[in-house]
Length: 290
Image (cartoon, rainbow, N blue to C red; front, side):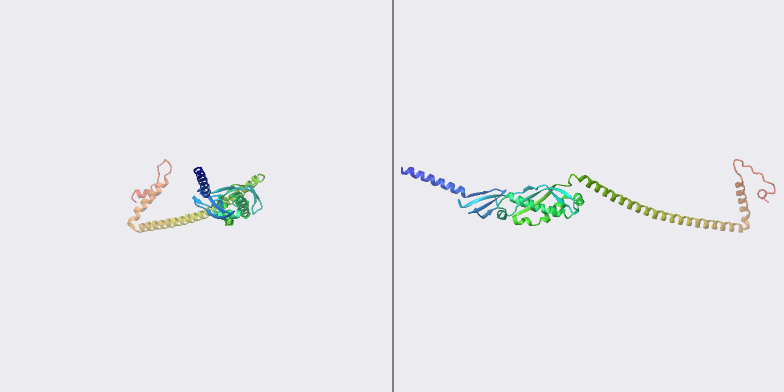
C-alpha cells in the first residue's frame, strides 16, 4: 500500500515537473519576436531565434512578426497643384523594427499599425502630389514620386516602432470622365512644342545657308578677280614678248610670215579650203619672197 502511494506521488511530482518545465520554455522562430509579459507588462523582448525561459504561471508570451509585411492602401482621390483630381491606388512594404515600441503604442496589433500606415502614407501622398501639376504626375517617373513620398514621411513611423521599406503605386491615373480630354491636351501641347523646335531649326538652317552662300559668292568673286589679274598679266607678258620679237629686224620677216599664215587660216571657213589671192596681195608677196 505504501509503495503504491509512493508511486502515485512520484507520478504526480513528475507530471508537475513536466508541466512546470514545458510552461517555462519559450521557443522563438526566425520570423518572429517573443514578448515576455509579467502581470500584463512587458518584461523583456526575445529578438533572436532559439530557446529561452520564462517564469511559469507568472510570465506569458506574445508573438510579433519579424518579417517584411505588405499593406494594400485603400484607393483614394488626390488633388494636384493645378486643382486636378487623380486616383491613387498604392501599397507599402513595412516591418516592425522596435517590437517594444510597437507593443506599447499600438497594443501589439497589426490592424492598428495598418490603420496608422493608411493615414500617414495617404497624407504624405496627398502632400507630395498637391505640390506638383497633373502633367508632372503623368509624365513623371514612379520611382521619383515614391522617393518623395517616403522622404516626406521621414521618421514619423519611428514612434510606433515601424520602418517603411517601400512605397509603390499600382495605379496613379485620371478619373475616367476626363482622362481622354487631358491626354488630348497634352498631345496638343507636345505638338506645339515640336512645331516650335522645327521652326527654330528651319530658321537656324536658313541662317547657316545664307552665310554659306555669301561666303561662297565672296570666294568665287575673289577667284574670278585673281583669274582676270592672271589673264591680264599673261596678255601683258605676251605683248611684251611679241614687241621684243618685232623690235629685232632679223625676226620681223618670220613673224610677219607666221601672222600672215594665221590670217589665211582664219579666212578659210567650212569645207571649202581654196583661197584665191591677187598677185599683189601681201600674202602672195611673202610666198614670192618679196
